[in-house]
Image (cartoon, rainbow, N blue to C red):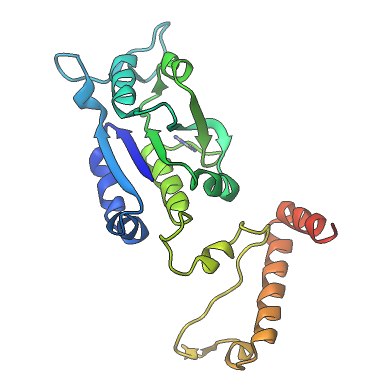
Length: 231
Ligand code: ADE
């Protein structure tokens, strides 16, 4: 898989790509990343990438020229999936991450300021995705959040794929509590059942923990789970 990230803040992206699972994915040559500075494509004499909005209003708009040219610079054969992280997009979730983990080439366009010129959104076949109903300053953090969740699902990236498949949301259930050594920390004990060696009982305990947590914290997921369970 190839992932291109178009940004005016390349230094925000690189440290994350060079950490943890994303670094491992690149080292294993399962995924290759390219961080492209949109500014380098600007034909403006000051290398500006934004301008004032027509019709007035607060904030700056990312201009079409550097975006058109930098997107075209990434496209190789028109099979690329182009994603624009934006709060007015469709909400991202685990199902979407799984689907995107099958792509060969994804291009993320990170917008900033007030937004990007609408003609960019109209001209390319772009999927507009939000990571939640809140507004961030730019698309870099949402792009990285999506990239992390996609890449960890690409076969070969995580050794224990079973663990990734059991994550919260892979099924409509939140995850259970997990513990590691020591058995007692500041007087607080690990649940006895986890020390019992009885794997069937441990599995049942974990499942009931997941169910209880989901029922209390996410009634929307709980409803979905009950529907699936009773099918
Ligand atoms: N850009 C700014 N806020 C965002 C959000 N919530 N999701 C995706 N992209 C964004």
